Amino acid sequence: MKKAIYILYTICVLMVVSFFVYVCVDSRNEVFSARKQSECQYLSAYKKTKVYENASTELPLGLKTEYVMRQQEIPDGGESLMFYTLHQNVEVYIDDELVYKMKPAENNTFGKTPGNTWNIIPIYGKDSGKEIKVVLIPVYESSVDIIPDFYFGSEINIWLQIVHDNLLPFCLSLLAIIFGIIFIIFVACNYRNPKVDKSLMMMGMFSFNIGLWKLTDLDGISLVFPQSIAKSNVPFLALLLVVIPFVLYIKKLFVKESKIWYLPCIASVVVTVVSIILQLYNIKDLRQTLWMNHLVMGMLLVIGVVMLIRELYQVGWNSKLKMMMLCLGACLLGMVADMFIYYISHGASVTVMGMLGFLVYIIVLGVQSVREAKNLMDIGIQAERFEKMAYHDQLTGMYNRAAYADYTGQASFKLNGSVVMMCDLNNLKHCNDTWGHEKGDIYISSSADILQEVFGEVGKCYRVGGDEFCVLLREVSTKRCEQFIEELKRKAREWNRNSTEKFEIQIACGYAVYDKKIDYDLGDTLRRADRMMYHEKFMMKQEGK
Image (tube, rainbow, N blue to C red):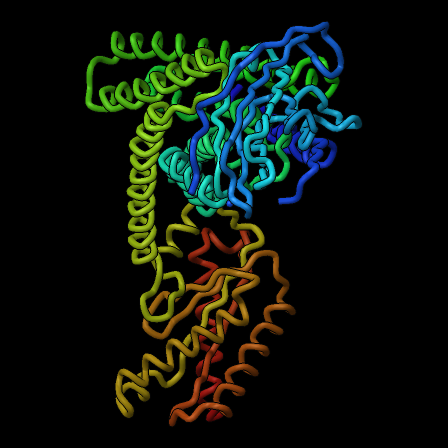
């Protein structure tokens, strides 16, 4: 089931990303401005009037709200009127002259809403004392009672004021995104390491999507985002991808397993698919299907509380459960606060407390998971180091006698087809006595390099004594063994020609193929290879090679 949920979530991610790309390509607003594009003040002196007419293409709900204001003194250089709208078409008149209009383009696939955007209207000195009328036409019921803040003054100063107002939630959201990326990269870089908990990837996805949701919900982001419709869909798309990674990570923190955790995951997949299909067919916008995602979150909240009580009853109170309850409590309270304030403000307010709750969850549990993974990796590295010390020769890096005994003693080791090749270094004692043990070590390590170069790709090489090496081969003919020995001697001669050392490398070799008729075990095969090697060693000394 867990694997199926991972696959379904991957499909959901691909659907969401593809949908977003489609929105970016095939959605745009139609903006008309009769003017070309300046200390900042907040305009509170205006007259608000609701006008009701029959519903039409221009008035989707049969309602529009008019805000009438006057600015008595406007400098010759001009100023700017700026206000932020949420899913409202906009018209601005100066003395009944239409100077600005913003609504979805006629050929826009996502034609119900212009999204969330800042409207910027230049006001000139000649407009001093004139009536400025702003007409807002809501496209959703939830947008009817949203009253924008009107700013008038230098455009750069207004920008600075907006950035100041968004600074704290922006930093918190960006922090969540950064933590998410760190977790994802950490798992991706250590994916093949069995000591790393792969569910930490889900923590990263949760953190990234939470941060992305909050970040793109800020009105300040609309100042620099050219695609207001595409940008307005990002928070809803990010929320669709929040539930599954949250569940897949949090469920592993519970000692007692339960398949009930998969219910909100399956529900989230269904909601994601249905929401995107309804949007694509222009039946319901993502904002209008948000309540379904909130229901899934409510289901998750109930399941989380039930599982906490079950864990407390069956496992008992402990430090891990305390930390988990703290993090879950902060996170779930943040979710509840966000949903409550969202519906109270009709989607116009962004809360900082909710983001703080998520950050408590992300930082505490995420950092704890990374620390545990790092400790396990350190233990694994230490174990690998001990294993290497136990099974590898320190001087040459080759397998040692213990590794040979362990490998050939395994039940899975097949005697039939095994070939043992024994090698011995001539005149090593003379080298040690004449030029010192340091030169003797060079003799041994250089010879090991040659053996590894010849046999490393076809067999296993072992240093089984001071000057003795063993090579295990599989399914190799005697002719091929002779070719290997010739190659070994050729490389030894090449080393001697190029070396500045006073000694020469001489390697005597012998080999034997396991024969069940004459060999009781591989030890008998090794002894036959050893005898052949000593014969070769004797012949090399006789010939003075």
